[in-house]
Image 1 (spheres, protein in one colour):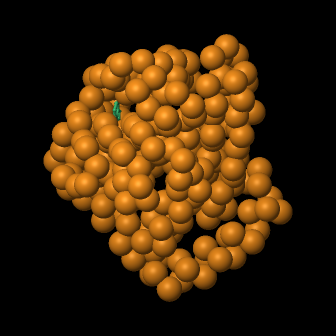
Image 2 (image 1 turned 30 degrees about the vertical axis):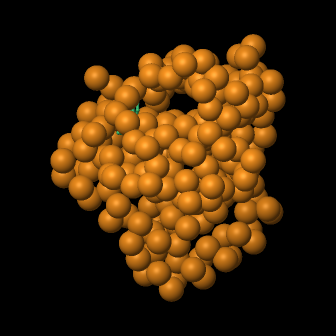
Image 3 (image 1 turned 90 degrees about the vertical axis):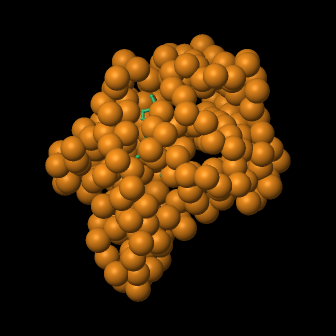
Length: 223
Ligand SMILES: C[S@@+](CC[C@H](N)C(=O)[O-])C[C@H]1O[C@@H](n2cnc3c(N)ncnc32)[C@H](O)[C@@H]1O
């Protein structure tokens, strides 16, 4: 079993997961959901959310009019909701070829190692008609200050490295990136909500000036 799978199957980890979206984390959660809805778009109807966790993105996409399936390796993480949820492995998706308009996967890539990325993307491409939206964490950012302390062992992909990996895949037609969040997730989670709102509005202004220092990079990959 892979590292990320083991960690999120622990009852104490799964039951506490959503606590990070209280206080300042609420602001962060709203911002992440808005960003994903912007990238997925209203015309994307059949959606697969890979490593859906407690389903916060799957639920938001379902509410926005999508027909969403959320898949996760951990039954402990899954919660009942409006979307359909199933237990499964991101590397062996239990769907026929080209079943979905778009696939998404948030806060998952950091659980993979570079050698696993081509295999994962190939499997995503198999079940996806149009595009894949996911995110990576940038080592050239403030996130590097605390990522070493995370027990689930995050891997931070440098943007040029990930671009190179994508360019090497013949089934990738093109891709674009949207850098976001100068202040990393961990800091938002520790702030009171009022402060997080202020920080977030400043964050939104400075990201355009120093995009290469963004802690989070959103990727939209077309197949
Ligand atoms: C950090 S959580 C992210 C959950 C959700 N996407 C979010 O942003 O709140 C990572 C999730 O990846 C899931 N996961 C880890 N390895 C997986 C695999 N091989 N296949 C499917 N899900 C996996 C874990 O169970 C966990 O729910």
